[in-house]
Length: 389
Image 1 (tube, rainbow, N blue to C red):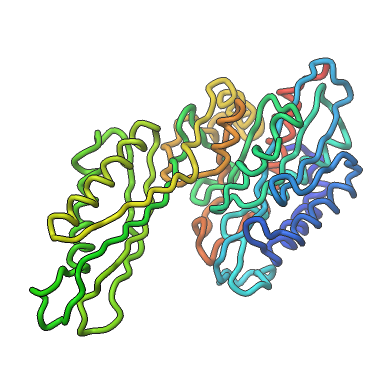
Image 2 (cartoon, rainbow, N blue to C red):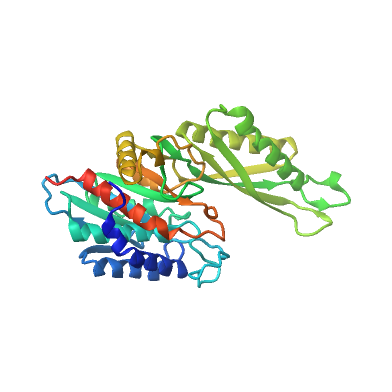
C-alpha cells in the first residue's frame, strides 16, 4: 500500500497549515495561537469531540470508527512546541517571532497528524476509536507527563500509543526504529563548588575554586571511560562553567551545569551515584567542598516488541521494505514520549527528512514533501490496528 492518493488532494492545504505554524512558533506550554489553530482545523474537518487544556495546553480529539465492536482505542501523538532559537533558514515562511523557531519539526508533526485526522474523519474505515494527542512542551517541559498526570491514558481508555519524529540525514520518507531502547534518558546536573577566595597574587592563602572546577571536569570524564562497561552507552557533558568576576581575585564559589544520557536504568543509577562520589571527593582533595544536584528529566524511550514490529510492517507497506530499518542505532538524544511508552504499549518511529540541516539548528526546516508520507503512516496504523469488524 503506497502513500494514500486522497492525501494528494489536500497536500497543499496541509503544507499551508505547516508553514503557518512555522511562521508563528510558541514555546513549551505557552501555545495560545498554536492550540487555537489546531482546534480550528480539527473543527473544520468535522471532528466534534475535542478537549483542550489537558496537561495545561494539550489537546485531545477523538474520532470514532464506523463500528466499535472491539472496544479498542489507540493514541497518536504529535508535539506542538518550538525552540528558543533565532531562525536563519531564509525560507519564505521563516519565523516572524524574534528568538523563536520550529527547529525540531514539531510544526510538521502537528500537520501530519492533522492531515491524517482529516482523512480518518472522512472515511472512518476502522473499528474502535482513535485519540489524537497534540502535546505541548516536549522541548524540556515534560508535556507528555503533564498530559498523563491529567488523565490522558485512563480518561480516554487508550490501549496503545504511537509517536513519530522526522530525522534529518535519513533519506526522505525512509523509516527507522528499533525494538527496546531507542532514545536515551536525559538528566540535568548542577555542581556547586566552594573554595576559599583570596587575592590572585597570593593563591596560597586560598583554595582556588577554578582549579577545583577544572579538576572535576577532568575527573568526571573517567566515569564513562573507566567506570562503566563500554558496551553500555553513557554520555556526560558538562556544558556551562561559572566562576569569578574579575582578573585579580580567586573566586570563592563556582558552578557547572551539564547533562547525563544513558540507555538503561542500571547505568543511569550508577552514573548518578558515581558522579556524586567523584565530585565530592575531587573537591575534598583540593580542600574545597562540592555539592551535586541531579535532576531526572526524561526516562529512556523504550519501544515495545509487538508494537515496534507492527509499526515497521506498516512503514514497509507505504514505502517498501528496502526503505525501512528495524536496527536503527539508538540515539543519545531524548524524548518525553518515553513517559507515554511507560504508561502504555506502543512504538516511536523516525521518518527521514532528507538532506536538511540538523534538528535544533537555526537553518532547519521541515520538508513538506514528507507530509503525505507521515500522514499515510498514521492512517495505515489506525486501519491496521483497528480493522473493520
